[in-house]
Image (cartoon, rainbow, N blue to C red; front, side, top):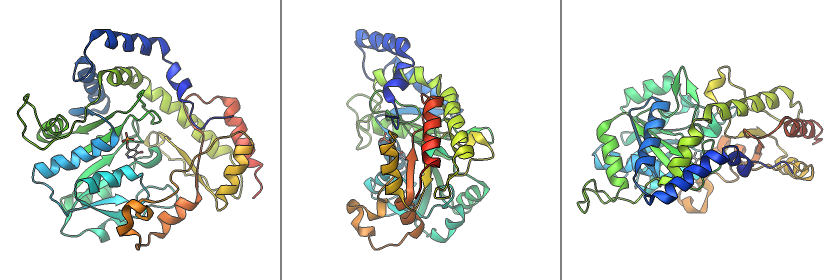
Length: 368
Ligand SMILES: *Cc1c(COP(=O)(O)O)cnc(C)c1O
């Protein structure tokens, strides 16, 4: 079976380094808010070229905390609107509604699945306070138009960078394009921990301090609470592993690009629509390689029979989830079409040439 993502193989690449780090932390007796978290924050801040990085418990919390801090700072308030791509992972939306803010869904472009920036301005109202850019599947969504709209309407730009660590546009890394960004180190992400983990990056010191305080029970002095905070911290074991894996992220992303390039060049089947390979290859880190086909279920069954594991990202759009029944009557035709047609092929830094060959061959022989 060609696994969709072989996490065991990914993490065993660095076995000795990770094992000795884990043992050191275990024997040190210090498990939270210590030197490992500090070091990881510093390394990630240098990598991104962003002044402030705060390690947190997971990617959802990273996004929740950014919005919560903006509320505490008086920049946003309950009922304000946040523009967000309609086909994102549910966590982007949860971060918004958890803060009693209102998600305003924007349709994606069908050819690259990313937010269509020409559709932003029509959705702006006096209550709009931010655009959440989701670099979906690993591809940066950012352009001059987005900057102009944000400046004109005084909107914050928040990046959901859970899927695109290491991507860059014109020499600037994702996570450094807007005002603040949330990262996820869920094991399956391009930079994955051995459990949950996340981070916020931002350029504003006051925002950074507020986020750090909220994430630590709303306190920056023991037993003194400034905010009604959360407990959302990156533990030392995860931070230690992430510092090691961060050294290899560019090399790993480059391996993903090589596979994506082969899929784009060599998959030739009129039933299948490939994602566009970007002219500037650094703009994509291929967290997922997502194709479209009108007969998705048949293709998935066929690939399973050929020992190729695939997944669907995502089968149900947020506005059609039971959790968001208040949006069930809105119509988002592009989003809805994508959720019926998308299929994610195996891609990872540990896939070998033989496996890639097999995937290409099987898809080319698929007869709709
Ligand atoms: C994974 C993911 C998140 C949430 O990250 P967790 O660490 O799982 O909480 C948020 N947004 C997107 C787009 C994601 O893919």
